[in-house]
Length: 207
Image (cartoon, rainbow, N blue to C red):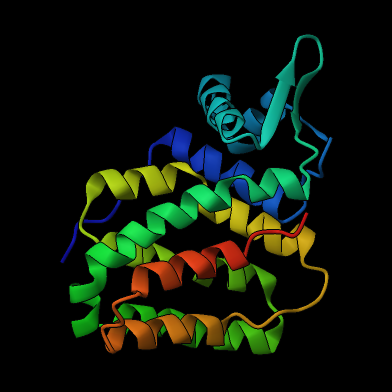
């Protein structure tokens, strides 16, 4: 059994702030006050500052002299920028993972099953979580640490959640699109990489 993943204090604070942005605690344009977060979490301001710096590198927040840190006023164009990069990475991942996943798609099937439940409930938070978990399983199956690190560095989870939450006013089902990808892996579709690339690009926000 794999050892449990131990997250640093900075990582935990970053996830706390990310969750607040995604679930609407901090709205676009709203200020995030470093000392308030530190007091709330009973930590010093140093790891909070480090977490905010990471989120700024993901372009989710912005800072300005004498104005503090605020959630960026993100547009559809902002959210769309990462999708071509992500699509290229996942095309490579699918091609590298094809043999491994052809023999065992259980991890993907579990996420599709969870997506069906989320679709029926109209639960956008669960849709985002299981969509990202599905794609992460493909990238991990590629067995390439550099590829996984690069994919993770794009902030896929939060961008997906924000796209679904902010830019998809009409409910949309996600399970069947992902089930088709599973079937393509099972039948060893030689165009699996292109199929996944097209799928990712189709999910990009419309500008």
